Length: 247
Image (cartoon, rainbow, N blue to C red; front, side, top):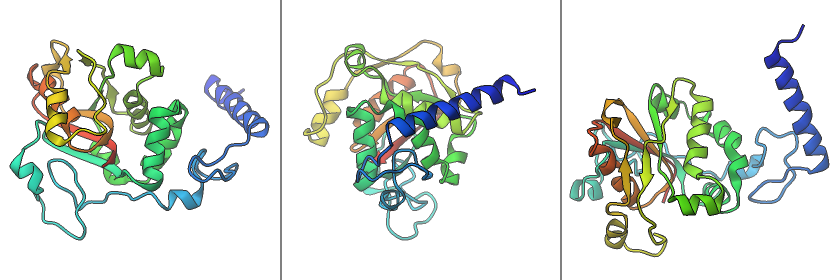
């Protein structure tokens, strides 16, 4: 007799394949049909264009550096302006398929990319160890913005990680305290000013150990810094950050 889990798995398989027959899946980058490929919404050729970030990174912000670097290397920006968090990592650069993936997730209702993100991150064993045993804290949207979008893309990313690394836990302990203008065309200084005091952390969060903030893209780090300061206000001691992409 089939277990309930096996039954659900078979029903899901039939449902997904029926949808594939009625609405063939295409690559979000090039539009090529991807039925039968490993990725559900990215084709093999476009996945090759993802610029993965490897081990040679700034110890503080995760900025990639070509070639080999010694352990403990910190980039000039972090030496001049140390971030409020302890360390950060990103999966890939914000370009080509990586940028497209984030754009669809963020602006095109791409909550359905959750499994795709898990499949992509599964290829990076060093990230799996980075996540293991950690508390995943999604960077929140303002409630009005989340209502308009229908979801928070940072929660989607956190859930994708949790499905891949079962000993992680997602905790929504941050909240957005005010609406902030878009960061897209702001300078570093304006971004930092824009995000000052934009987050608050629930009381008692200091009891949590090894927190990783989760967001979609890191550019200047202003959003992650403001989030980390809110966590610090509740005495969370060791704070890391992870973003899908690094700008």
